[in-house]
Length: 623
Image 1 (cartoon, rainbow, N blue to C red):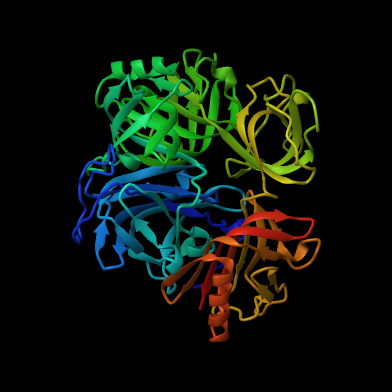
Image 2: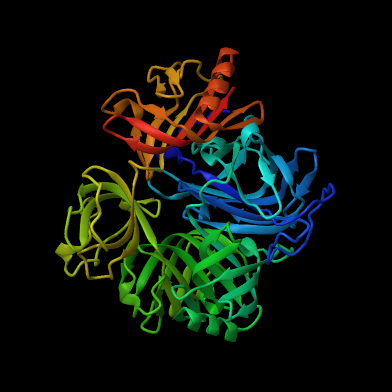
């Protein structure tokens, strides 16, 4: 298998995470090979079985669509008992879950010590699309190392012996399995293929830092308990019993129900009035100490895709009058499943109703829809030709979604004051290069249109620790059309000095035996920039912005770590370590035994003053 050109021209792969959250709530059980359908709506220590909360997500990358069919998911106890926790096959687009995760199923299962797991993926009807060097979508075909079409793959993982998953009555556990697409896929745009070689890692009780999403039909509302129950239907699944989930709300929970906004108890009352079977999507966090999903946002009825209206979600590439172009759009046909369609032309009108995510009391209209804004819009598809899709939303509904962009700071926030502001040299908006966007009309006059090289960002408060030239990712909302500057109202800023950088290296077959000049569990591993053969890929990626390792100011980079998820894949078997010392000991022994490194991928914060990455996740592919 050739890793090919892993740079942006060949689309750097994203990192997909499969979270399997296990909340123990049962007593003893006999061995079983099937899925116990005991209801996990209200787990308690008096139940016979444990409850598995299965959750999927992926980290940011350049896959526009990575849709495959998940046909099997199992966990294996130390006594050999295999438990199937997936009730039915489910199509999943991993590329849609870069900033959130979604519950896949809730399953009751016997307690015990679980030491491994598998997931089976069917690529037969896969829809995998990547960006080319200009940001346009290219569909690629999945192949194996020999160039043959990939059909069904079963991915296996073995846990660290010191960190097995122990499922006990009344003890909640979180089991996180990471389907690492960066280490698993290599895109070749010369032949429009992606070579698939699965890489899976897992860890027990990690921090669940991203937003969690659940969806399904409404079953009941309990106003007294400030909660409601839905029947889980993940990823637009229609068939299969995926379990029932209680969703808790509070006074700060926002609701968008049948295109009307509410907050707190008023939203719960409106949800009850909407009635059973109403489609619901809730976003929030999951508290494993009390088995409660706490919603921060709830959308229902005609405010969610899949109802009586067509819908499209993507980023606004340009605007002229009431006409906009969405790029990287997911298209939801009325009453049907979602498909990826790269470009959709949308017509707005004065009757288009506009809301903003998380702002139930705000007043918005189509003037708030500007270039660079991520948008979910409902209407009627008037042109179904994939090459010229058109959606009429002139009497429809649009929701301003949280939007992200990546770039480097050109003017840092002030150190003091009541508010905050900064300027950023933007490289990518929602994963697309800024060269694709037309910012004409975004400013109060032609001379004040947004300028990507000096994108003006307002912040809700002063931020400290962000310096000029720092790579950042910013979340928030684009300033209304025709009102810049500022160009963007930021709500959250992530500094890649602290997290989320990717150091990636890859070699052609048979790999390299001299990747490191030194290896130490305390001082870290030092990358050998003169490794042989010359690596096909050797770069640091921060928010989609690549930097060749050879151009770093302090020479060869160092990767340090202590605790995290460190995995080695060799001969179809992945071994996971939770300590850097154990990982390096294993890796050293294998290299001394004649193994060679085909791929090295580390994630973490990167300090450019010392060219040191402090990593929490490392994946190594050995030949």
